[in-house]
Image (cartoon, rainbow, N blue to C red; front, side):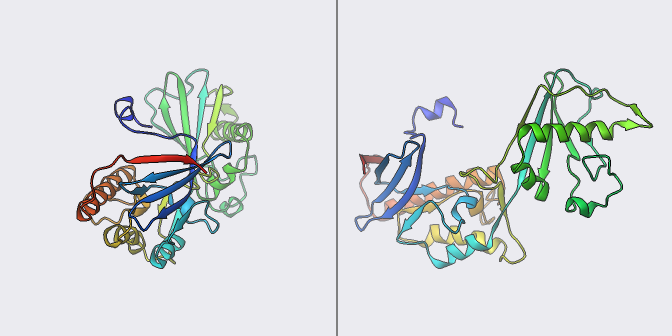
Length: 288
């Protein structure tokens, strides 16, 4: 989200997905989009284009966005080697607070979601489902569970109600000792689950470097592209952070923010080198 004070100064086009980015011979950048109704538009960016599309979307074998001319091989290789971590958040609103006062976290030592507690961790692919809960608020009473790895991926395939039932079962199972309830847990009023891996505009959470990757060197491919290319295209986002400057930290929100500042600075420097006269950021909108 952009606060109202800043958004008044920015021309924001909602519900439009970029499908094609073309660097023209005249030093312009053409961006083609398609909106939710299927209508296609084309914009001419005279200053330049900063692409902050998440790595999870960019690295798909059949990406929904095309670059013309194509991106350099080193950038494509870096995107294929890097990966995106999966984590989801399960927030539950209860009619009243049932946990002890001043509780910050609830950590459950459970390997299972049902009575079969004797089954080993491998039965659940190694992770402890619904094990870590954070108290977000006492009034209203809201707690959140953070699901990662295989557990996060299974959440993606479940309905909110199914997640809610299993989560409450886990909480109630953990808070029973010798048959008596340590805490009486009511049914939730509402449950909300994120599904970042399934979201077509994120397809994951943050960038990680698998063993098969070249680590931070792969992230550096984006910064090298930004500094050495002669195009009007620049990349930003947490996946482009390689630690080359202070605050350019991969996998972080502040890194993503700083990468945008870095890309904008390079874009303006590139424009000055070309002695280009000032022009509106976006003009010549037309339907195609």
